[in-house]
Length: 213
Image (tube, rainbow, N blue to C red; front, side, top):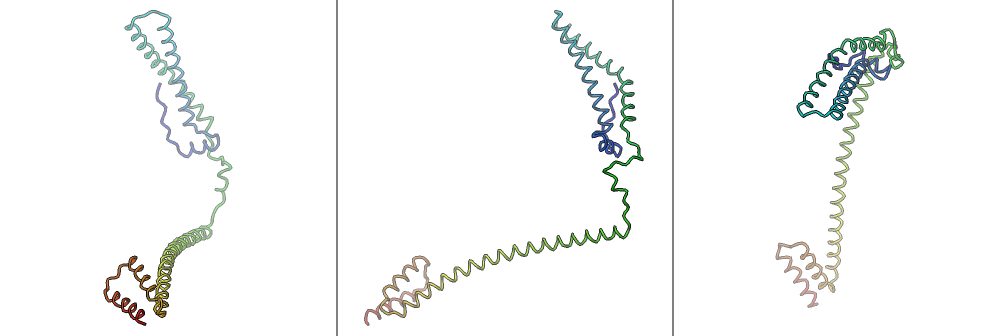
């Protein structure tokens, strides 16, 4: 049996698929595969039956298998002309005339003028421009959001620093709290190392002056 032509698709196949749900090419391939499988399975069943019902040697089993395979090839070859006739019947039965318009393609009957086509092109260009602007705006807003978030963190840190400075200034104005101020400074130094030695002398002098008073 000659092999069926491979599926190639095409406009006719697509149109037939829209109308019937499948095309002539696929249908012909399916029929040939079904016939080939039926012939092969029939001879395999015959071979299995003979091997089980008749006592034969291993050499005879090999010869039987070769004979069945030969019969399969011969049967498929002789079935070729009949399958070709079936292919022709399928093609004539499923061929959609070129003057037939399917409901899905009725919209193609509406012709578009050059002016309408130009207008559609302008609309597409405008939509593309708007999309690019929107993309750019989203990028800018994202960057601005990140910048504002960083600024908020800086403001929070500055606010805490101002609170510490206000507390130090208030304690400096109250001479009776010099010892308390020194304790707070030492606490701050434990958190943030101070490199300048003059600051220690300054606060020690303040404490001594307070004690003398």
